[in-house]
Length: 122
Image 1 (cartoon, rainbow, N blue to C red):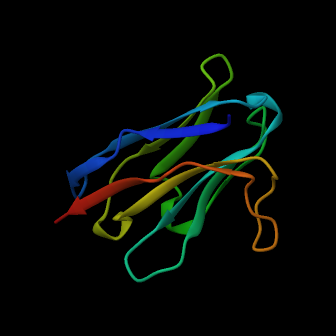
Image 2: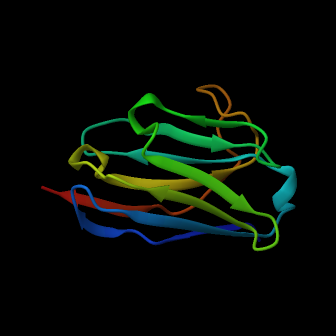
């Protein structure tokens, strides 16, 4: 069965860094674009970054540009999100997602991870 398993979350102070990982299994990893979504308290889930199957196309929401870096490893079937200079407003549950790319309001990912908590304190 298809699985997307996130890891690397936790609690950090503002200005710190975290690296999220998402290990994928059960589908052809290289054929699917992937992305990271997040949902902060009281807010709707939003796409913050995406990456195509061979990393040729990468997107970031304005609020994370210059601070977050998305990448993927075909050999390890893993999606990453390096988060630097974290801010309190980055506090959210982060979700790994894959396939049915590109992601829009009317075109949601086919597969989702369970989500992982990131808490940034001042």
